[in-house]
Image (cartoon, rainbow, N blue to C red; front, side, top):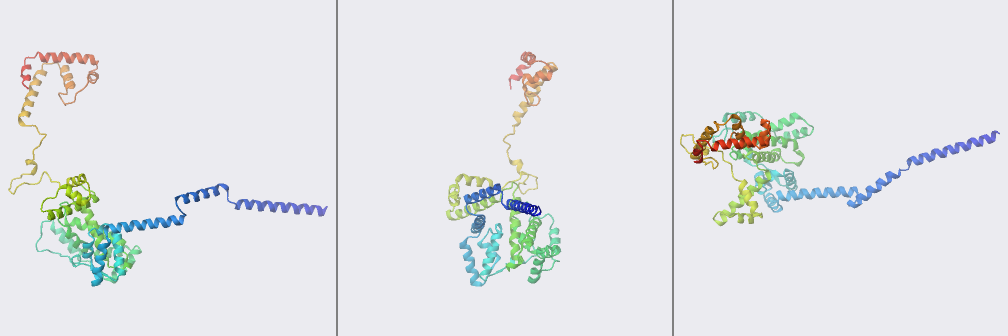
Length: 423
């Protein structure tokens, strides 16, 4: 009995072990639904074109192509080669020369950084133009530039003059600290370059009657803050060289957005600028004002598009603009004819007609007067239907029609009706 019982127990244990093994195997096996989902995903990837890795590579390639396309738009290869040749011959280029070859450089500062990298690889140094570094605190002749209080400008210049410049080593040290979110370093680097903002902002004075010098400085300061946050000291160029373009971008965008009474989108401002350049060039070549068709041919646009550009490029003029040099307070609005205005003779005739009509209506009952005023809009110019007048007086539309007919008949028989026929 003991041997048989032992065998039975061993068999049970083996069966139990087999069951556990089967369960673990089942658990480890992937479910059929999950396998199907993976297969479907793989099929979709193949249809889209390749594996996940290939798709990532394709995305990176597309992104690089887009960057190169944008760069070629703002940084043409032939212009870049000319800049390289000039730099190789002298060993350096200035920021003014970069601006000369690429006038719209501030619209693609990321592309500008790559230009800097290419120049650095060639061993070409980037120097700052003197005009960006000198700031005149006091001018001998103060021009009328739309500044309401010149004292505020002088106070600001005096205030920023207290901040000392930073050396190249200090600049690099501050940039490293800024990478670690050091607010004090940001403040120090910003204050040291406030003079740079003023020197650039002065070049844009007078381009807009809506933006004073202080406004331009403020917009430039916003660009300076942006440059402080994005500056990469590892590239090797000076901060002032890099910040110049951010400051220019901020100021030019502010001018594009606020220079006109009616705002024009930035892309249309660029188109208008191109239109002006083409028109000026054709004027020199032809010796006369170019036709819209000639401008359209030169710009590669349709004639209707050129007409649209001509229309929106017109400057707005205030009706309160003073006219003449005399002391009289004459404004432009006084010399513009109002085509919708009624002549004095017609206005006088209308007033007489109203007075005589009122004399005739005064002989009617109050109810009849109100009904005629509502039906013909004599009071406020708004006419009403029989249904609307009936609802107002609480009677049927037929009753209103009868009252109206009776009142008109009384007017026809009035003694003063002949006077109305003159009008």
